[in-house]
Length: 499
Image (cartoon, rainbow, N blue to C red):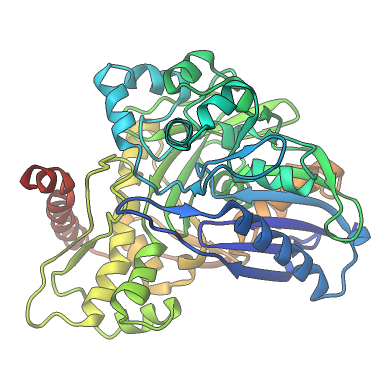
């Protein structure tokens, strides 16, 4: 076993990364796939394209270094989480496009359950806020709106899976229908404390139990695949953010990481018992290994790196995402401009599905550089909102924030983030921690790495960003952000009333 292969299936691309025993990247392949926006607030992917791009990059990653299947000890899978796929048990064909985690079409379903007083029960049982973000209402929408789907589901002919489940199904030729607790805990259908599908939640969302995958652990051999030219065990599964927590070696209670990807996700390891949030954060499973379940508090920001993509694709003020730091650095500050990137509503701790993006404080002197800087800072403000709620819930004062994801390479953002939090921000040498976490989980299952202590010893720091912002400056900036937030919240509600 020379390497472990991680399949990192994200919101905008599929990647495959080979890691060695030191946790270093030895080969990588990546391919973007189509983003589908049928209606305002709707976001879809083609499940077959998710599979084709992921299988192609898996083969390509090995090919680039002349690696054979026999040299791959195991495959670990990490994935965009709440994205929902339903397919025919017999044909393997999806009944419709995947409904992506960002999609807001089921907000009315959640509002209906809330009006019936079900939100507190749902949060107590699942650890989650009742929101269209999660899979439960998405499954219900598919069964109601895809012709014939409800009848087929009642006959046991349809299967549901988050993206990890879909990939394992395809990798094993339809022999294995499985998920892990980190993904199952994002569906609104799992009892968080028991780690089992909950019959009352299934009734609330009208989802037949026959559709659901088996909940296994996060580190075990689920099955084997032959797509690499030989039989390789699939031995690790974790949702992308939990995988990043594991890859950052945040294995002890009180350790925190934040991933800057399409969205932004902060997780605090809370130990072997779930912490129930009083500040609209999520209680979730971190991972389950050898029968031991560990938990985390999570704050989710829907739009982070996607705001930079919007500058590129929507406004055209940069040609590539990597240009944003140089453009933003042309000015000392935003000139009073704030960008609230609530393009898909607001996540934690606000949970406002009717919020919309807002760009405020513009004057005749506002330039593209000011807007670029406001987009970068808008990411950091959202992270601060989560941290404030997280510290209030846990009673833990953050000592450091470990960061990863594409935007963590942006030094301007990291410096501003440290200043805004008043806390050191630490970037590791290997920033591909989401894929690394999946690799670690798979490697543990096959004995490639001995234990978590060995994995923790592999973590290395690249750079430490020390806060230097004055408290008065921080307070003024935060006040401006709060004012901008108020203008973005509930924006879609008055628009509807005016129609």
